[in-house]
Image (cartoon, rainbow, N blue to C red):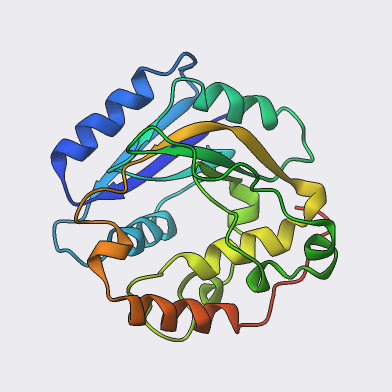
Length: 220
């Protein structure tokens, strides 16, 4: 099984640190490949990541790891992700994380059964946190609208994609890794909260939450 780690950012030093965190993991087999994308034009790092994935041949990869260059993987990250995908029914994983202060902000990120049953992920508190991973075949089921919607999202460009992935999986095919596997460096100027106004973030999030949920898939 081949894994592609995709991360984007605007700072070369962040890229060096992220790559170092990938190499410092306790599990770093050759079937993990890494690409860091620097957004030189400042067009939006997540959009650059989406555009890049749409342009290349992903056929050699089985799983995509979706990250940010200004963050870091924890030493157990790759091992725990790879272990989950030994189950062919696992199509998607999300983790838990520590913040820049070494704290674990969330103690339980699982979804209640009624949210799963109603596919009401857009109506519930955000749970799909780093480290986010998904099978290539699942990603290829996304439409252009799932990826880009019908309006230009600046602060939240990938949130509709992430909701769509959850909805296509349902409870049966998503796995939550409760152990922190990611370090979210939130205390810097380039986070979403520090880069955009609270009004814009709320407006874009409310728009995405208002969209019709995707149908759950029976197979990939």
